[in-house]
Length: 422
Image (cartoon, rainbow, N blue to C red; front, side, top):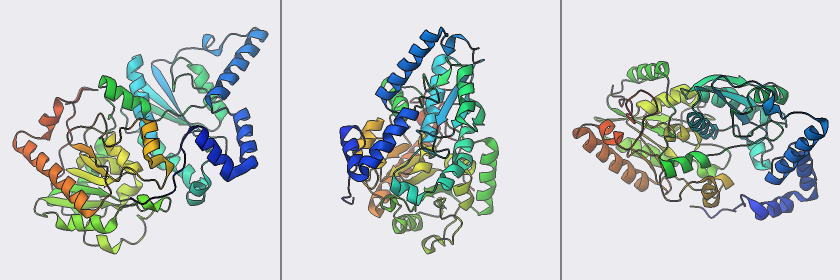
């Protein structure tokens, strides 16, 4: 792995790094932002205390005492003033569903709240230069809204026009909001920490996202049209302009697909969404490439759920596999110092255990903490395929995995959909 510059991820070290790179102009801008929209713990505590004092002096009741209940709904607020427009939203969804079950509520209503800076949050300059504001806003419709449809308990989605509209919804049911104590004036971004902790310490079920029946049917039709003659091995590629050090080793993945026994396995590539409308890379000309799955989130999830095995490096779309217990996958290249959010320090901060798979992973789901070199991916894939074959011979992976997974709905616990075999 390349020895790249490391950026602090939290605490005084991060503050000093920001001061070093941005100087006093950055500090002045950050203090203005904190005054208008507090994001730090001390800033939010001071803001709450000041508002409580104002209400007491004015003789007003707290908002929570003056409004109606939620009608069995958990209102889950994804606030783009502090949250990224990325596949990290998947962790927000499963966290909201976990909270819904704890409270005994019937459904989740997702509210996407526009950020204060043109509908978004401020990103680091390198990221903003690579991924424009317009591209990030487009992800609301291409990632956030369709991803909400992957959680069965979601009964509706509101893309708020203004922060004031979101505040009206938050005030309508203050005791049934997620994250707890959320309000637009004090935005909160819950990451994967709580789902990971709940799974690790209490065995709570986390991987509850699912493909829709109609998208599964569409993927079946696509595979049949390709003349699929074996169990699908879906390979997800990353080929992105931001932090290219994290990209897939294209030559290694193409060679792996070439070495698969085509009498038994059928490789299908899903390209990076940023390149799926370009010409197919020459390395992939001999293989099926599912460009539509790169653009349509539901098709991507359905392919992952149908595949006998999913393979890829650590990137956003692989989160669909991680948070769907009906998939089988191996994810490689988990760490990279190319970006703060894939450093070992930041992964620990988020609650991941370095060197381990996810705490709620089934026997057919694994993280491999090595780069995607051909020898590494071939060794790991071969071992997983051998285990799947052995489980099938003794009754199938469904039965082998069932005892380790707890039910969420009235369905076979932990049973992956049948692997596609055309």
